[in-house]
Length: 163
Image 1: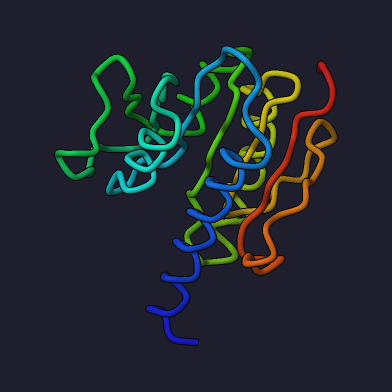
Image 2: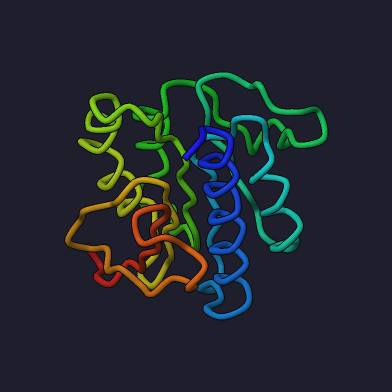
């Protein structure tokens, strides 16, 4: 598969799974949505469209988003995500979306040493996690995804315990 086709499949899976959350699952009351990896801001922009009444906080190392997709300063957290995300532990997030995979297995393996713990710590009980990388954590239970999404392309979890 070409890199272009892979990119299109990733973005399509991302959109389909987020729309599935909106249409079929819903979010727990209260709590913000956290966007881990703002990038160009496309997903942040989509989250604003599909969850217009929710606070959305975006994290990235630097702001490289399109001007139409930059959060207000109080909702933009810049710095090393491993550290900045830790400051949101216990915030009771309704949804955490993490798309910070690189496509390089060695680099993604390093990210996976801390990302599952950060996501679980940020989520409210019953909160949802959507990720481009698998999140192996005792507090996260995998949920069924739409049939349009390849099983290894994108992942959906619910925080099932109070720890």
